[in-house]
Length: 66
View 1 (cartoon, one colour):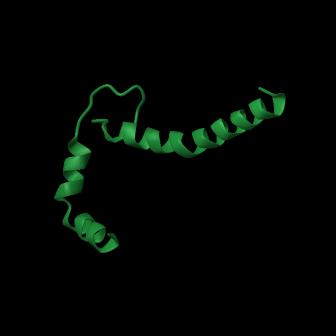
View 2 (cartoon, rainbow, N blue to C red):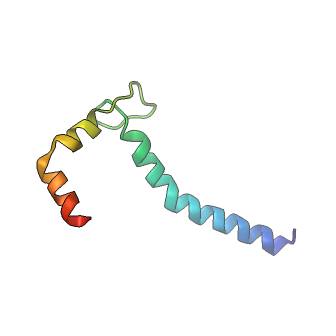
């Protein structure tokens, strides 16, 4: 592999990390039981998803968006 190819691969990996790591962090912390996000997660829970699906305004907005 040429030096410029390695640099291109590194740059592409850096850009992908900048785009996808924040999304992965949001998904990971959505399973946190705590109200304030802390790492490491001490207890996993689905309570935020339950609150999401019990909120009529949010579901109505989601239907309109879809």
